[in-house]
Length: 440
Ligand code: HAX
Image 1 (cartoon, helix red, strand yellow):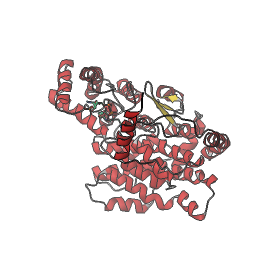
Image 2 (cartoon, helix red, strand yellow):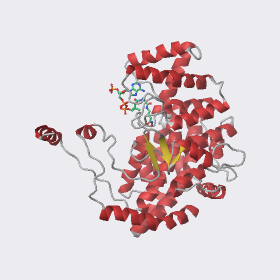
Image 3 (cartoon, helix red, strand yellow):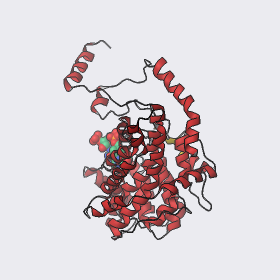
Image 4 (tube, helix red, strand yellow):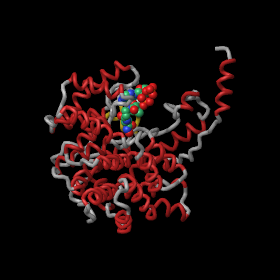
């Protein structure tokens, strides 16, 4: 398998680099930690290692060193498509090189081979109460797949540490292959009462299969959106909740299924993946209130009303970024090229113009610019995927690509179990008192 052979070829050099850092330079200081960071959710503490992606506050995400515009241009595309093959992005995340079209197609072919979901998973999903949240179903299905984990099986057989990454890669390919099938089944079952098993067709790529299994009306258009959406949502460094959860649970040598189910549970939180549905909700509220797209003045006043009501403007601000999120820009470009006259797209564009001014005037948000969630729901809505609570499932399919690439490399480089140190409140107070006595 191409990903296996490429990783194997790179491994000796990577292992030497990590060994040199941990054996010869372990005492070099990289960062210092403040009381504010400890009390404030470990914000910005430099303590995770990944080469898969990096978020530059002034520029946004880079996947394996490539910005979003660069990779959308460079990654291979299927015939007649404008958006790259998701298989090519997975290759880039795993290997760190832009693949040829054939190499991207090899990953796509692997997914097609591995997409079948065991019957008992469907049975389990069908037996759940109807009102179960789609993210709960999604996470349960991933957990249910765990008994087929190559990693768990080989670990219990007694595998050498140097080989952990190989079954990790097997599981990652299996998992990422099955996720769109499971998601599509949940979608059709939950909102349309259908319980037929979706069929993954090897003649089509990941994006096109998802569009077909979801049964949206404009399959070609939606397939393009699915490709873009999964690529953009794949990775955002290792410190966000879903990525860090995958890494943390995986560090206990829990297999990729156990780890990703946990990761999804974090993604399901309202401060993380669930935010996108709130953004679309806000846009729809504006649209309803003004019976269409408002004037700039009306929008300006509405935005201030939201802030004065003690609420945040969803889709704006970011913990790390200090510029418009390039994932937002890529999606807005997509919409403006394809359906510029859509009311919600026009509205999202106007919000982009007005809200940063309002947030700057208010002076609280460190970043008044839009994040990825300011537009992603709008695009789904346009194509008829209007079930808000399903949006985080879509995010989960994309996120799996990044976190599994990280999982494979973490095992390949022998990353140890995570175990940061805790302090008590009294210890922090003592540290503060000591600092006050120390002359500056
Ligand atoms: N509207 C109003 N106020 C905002 C704001 C916004 N969009 N963004 C930040 N602020 C406020 C904060 O609430 C905070 O106020 P207090 O001092 O009164 O607590 C102040 O500005 C400083 O916050 P910050 O340091 O700029 O931002 P944080 O790192 O604390 O939080 C958030 C980042 C994304 C959570 C924040 O900007 C926010 O709540 N945005 C709206 C919700 C949203 O878009 N969430 C999606 C995030 C994208 C993501 O990661 N998805 O998975």
